[in-house]
Image 1: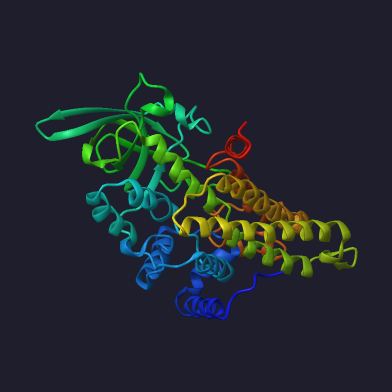
Image 2: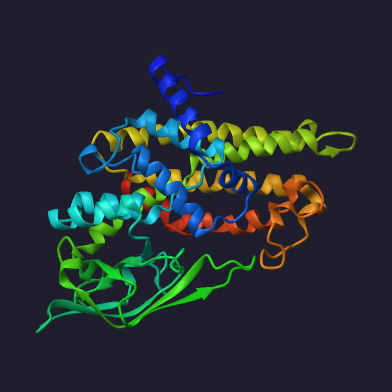
Length: 402
């Protein structure tokens, strides 16, 4: 089953496909399709290619550098990129901070920060989670105390953030900080932009199971931040944080990446033999493949509805939580089926530091090399961005009034 597009939409899809054939470097696409890690340089290269075409921030208004696309165009672009092996754009600046600044930032902040997000002058990371403040995000303890001295109006920040994805590459971090310790938790939080090169900022890696340094701890010790880096009003940061999370959760659904992963699964299931016949003819395995494909087709429609609502000026609400839940479950199921299809060939663990081309390691079918690593890494999908259990609470409150 596929969505039916109008002739104009089909023409746009052909335009996107031609762009990807001409501009997406094969070296990068091959890495993405093989499940290999992308370097910072790889990600910056793709970022620059999209920005040059004007397609980087495809959900931004035209006045701030967006292409002015409608919901279907965004959907087509994301799906075609995923199928072609286009990397996921680092989301923190373009997909998270950008919409917050556009809606809540002052004019000076928009004029300064938005062009730098597009150009790649700044690499952003997210300072939300803390030890003891994950799903209970309103309990953040990192403090920002305001003061004035000879150097001007400023905040002094102290505290710790954790699970900071790609923080080792970032020069900027947007943070939730507590500016009023006497107010109820949600009322005393502010949204602050912090230069990570400021004295007192320390980044420490958290090594993951596969030896990667994808996430980090960030420590703040008497870090001085100009008061002009406050987004919106002091103590109103919880409102901005929730707005940002709706965009993050919609993105975590990863419809396009699930479509690409399902295509990969189909190829594998047609090649791998079980009891003398292809795996896609095994009744149990074929039934699981069929069910996840049905779920994915249903999610495509929901995703289009959410994108259309945002394009019309709305803000994704409970729908973003629904997408987050189903999207992560679908991606995890597809990766589970790929790992199962590889059977014992998925068992070996080859650390990237020991085998630079580990995705091509001579252990069984080529698809086996990253099957286990991808499966275990993406168990995180149902936890970050607000755990799926928390999303169910949000849905019950917003829709059922519970």
